Image (cartoon, rainbow, N blue to C red; front, top):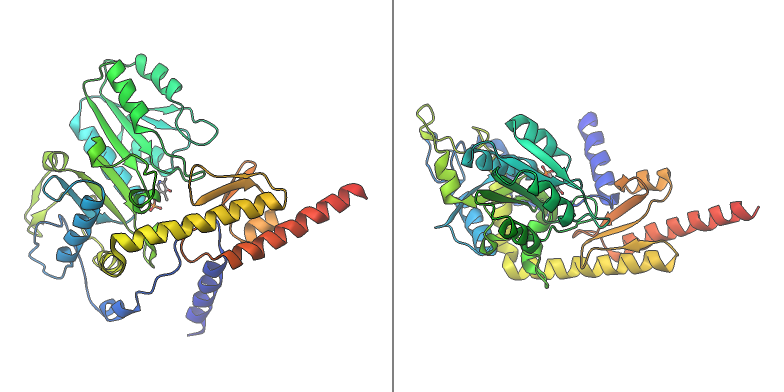
Length: 372
Ligand SMILES: *Cc1c(COP(=O)(O)O)cnc(C)c1O
């Protein structure tokens, strides 16, 4: 059909060109095409079978087990499920945190993803925004002074393991120091690792954020660094938190531990096939290659005289924003004066060169204009 062809071509062309979003483009899940003609539904808790046996929960549990292991724990101690994306995982973590305490306060930084504010509102949670440093990391001095005002309240720390704009990582050691210094008894740590969750465990130095650090829950996006045609994610939490909210629902004969009832059964298949094909070794190599493209991008930008920088070995290269036309053409996300390129798998050096050349022409053009 003409209309559908048009839509296909628009998406295909645009996805070949964007540089500003953390979505890997190098996937091929066509082997799962026959599943498109099936009803698949992972309704409810992944560990609890439902009366409607049209699910991929076995596969989903293997995916969760892989991530539990990657995040320095095991399926005996942590529980999780495949979500609709990072936002749902963050909502879930905050929900579990809320159910843990009476009248807690959530601390999160200015650089936090926009969806978190809405999630806090939905949950009716009290929260305080902490200032960010210029690199996007939480300002720990500001956190400390805010916390001293509410020492008597349970504290929920919402940490960024890779902020959306600059891929900054909040330092869990500093958070723990503050917890200790003020003898905060009741606290909960949630890590938003939407983008970095599939990268950080595989790079050196490794950003600290996993269960060996004592965090309570972690949210990761599946369609970002792993990539796929349908947004998805993984949320993991200590079992005790999940057990606190267990509710049995007789209608579908499963446990209502997840945010939504019906859940996607295809996305666990995609994640599982990626894990089977690539495994940890593949992810290490994938991260290394992407870091190399990011280092290349940073250097090329500097070569043409553009102010560019990265947080450590980030895949996100931050730089002075080019014209609106270029931002639109390459779909660069921008905020104020800065833009970024995120060097996800599927973006090659050749594509970076094409962009750099165009940016350079623009710069030369504007210099000429200034002279004339
Ligand atoms: C992308 C992102 C989110 C939202 O994740 P979705 O998968 O789009 O729902 C949350 N936090 C951070 C830091 C992100 O980069």
